Length: 67
Image (cartoon, rainbow, N blue to C red; front, side, top):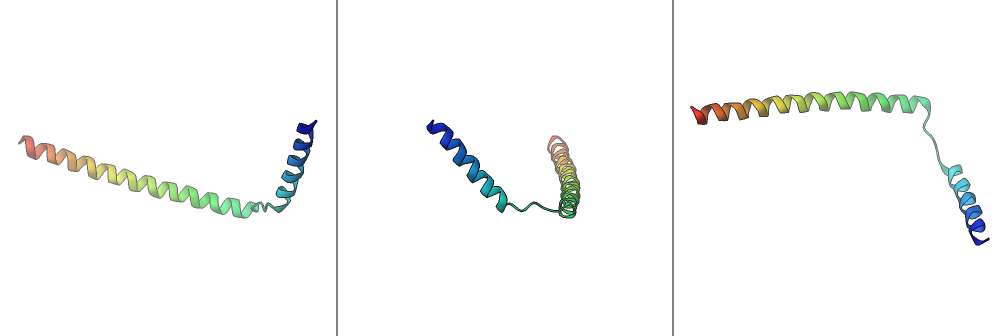
């Protein structure tokens, strides 16, 4: 029955910790979600531009060296 005592203690500690948790409001969740989406688009555009620049640079080097 030692395991039963451990389970009860675990659940009791879990309940006590959950009382300390503060959950974000709906407005906080919405605003941080918008920030994440905008940031994702900005980085996607940056990486796309970087990819195009690197690809064109690589193609230019290939054309110059193969003459």
